[in-house]
Amino acid sequence: MTRQDSASDLVSDLVGRARDGDPRSVGRLISMVEDASPRLREVAAALTPFTGRAQVVGLTGSPGVGKSTSTSVLVGALRKQGKRVGVLAVDPSSPFSGGALLGDRVRMQEHATDNGVFIRSMATRGHLGGLSWATPQALRVLDAAGCDIVLIETVGVGQSEIEIVSLADTTVVLLAPGMGDGIQAAKAGILEVADLFVVNKADRDGADQTVRELRYMLSLGDRKGHDESGWKTPIVKTVAARGEGVDELVVALDEHRQWLERSGERDRRRQARAEAEIEAIILAQMRSRIGDVRGSGTSLPQVAKRVVAGELDPYSAADDLVETVAHRINDESGA
Ligand SMILES: Nc1nc2c(ncn2[C@@H]2O[C@H](COP(=O)(O)OP(=O)(O)OP(=O)(O)O)[C@@H](O)[C@H]2O)c(=O)[nH]1
Ligand SMILES: [Mg+2]
Image (cartoon, rainbow, N blue to C red; front, side, top):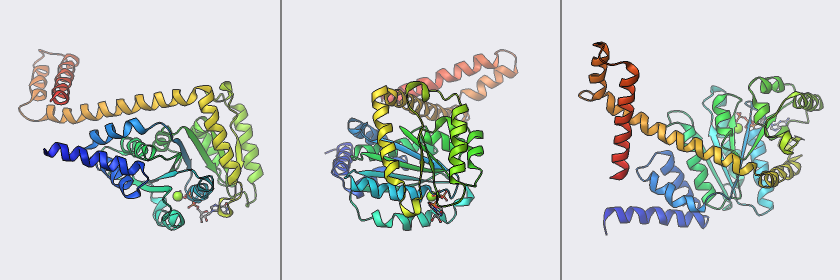
């Protein structure tokens, strides 16, 4: 047996065991994609036939709004229905969350021994290739492992969160009363991406006020792909800390899943997701090859010299280099 054979056996073995629900195999596969293992391509190829089943749900909102608490009670409610659940907690790069992750782990402890739940945190910092690249791969692992639903928790309302949220079939935006969240959300464009709002901490004063503000803002917005295709963004009030409103949230998530299928919106979103993913892979490949092009004795210094000498314009020079890069990628994938 060649080394190549035993490597592919390992991957298909892992995929097989992950599909049987073995948490260690799921963990190893996610590590392989996270670390950009040399077998990444093989892993992706082995997983692909088993993907496309899971409903991917993104939960986002300001720090401390109750995402982890909500995720945890959601997991409990979904497990009661016999669903297999994956959780990706995206470790935020924001300094706010210093101790939060530990808290999350403690909270998630009650699910840690449950074989129908896979929980994984992913770091945004110092990540090879960046999170936008690793998260879809990790999602694919959980999807292939037979998760009916995968919850992705991300902090904040910034650009990178919106990026991650764009991986989801269903995007849940959490707000809490009195945090000025509504206005912030509108500013960050999060109103447009939300399929469902949760006003958590409804045990506090001002929850109804937040719901009203939100309704008002939703009524103003021209929200593409939502209203016109028949989805009316629900607002669910919860007290996640006491598990209140979670059943309503589960119902709303399921209604959105059904609507996605019925309206064709799910396929549209997944198409867009796949396009973005392929694009990201291409760009990453190009970028690494540009590194080669920059090396001494390669084409960049040479063409730059010709630009300086006035023999070549920089656009033509760039065209030449892009062609060189493309050739190298071709050669490599053909090899
Ligand atoms: N009063 C009240 N407190 C809550 C509720 N839900 C969560 N909390 C509390 O709010 C705090 C933050 O909750 P988390 O679930 O960690 O919030 P998070 O959004 O995951 O926080 P980060 O991950 O740090 O952004 C914790 O102390 C929770 O116990 C609720 O419904 N009511
Ligand atoms: Mg959290």
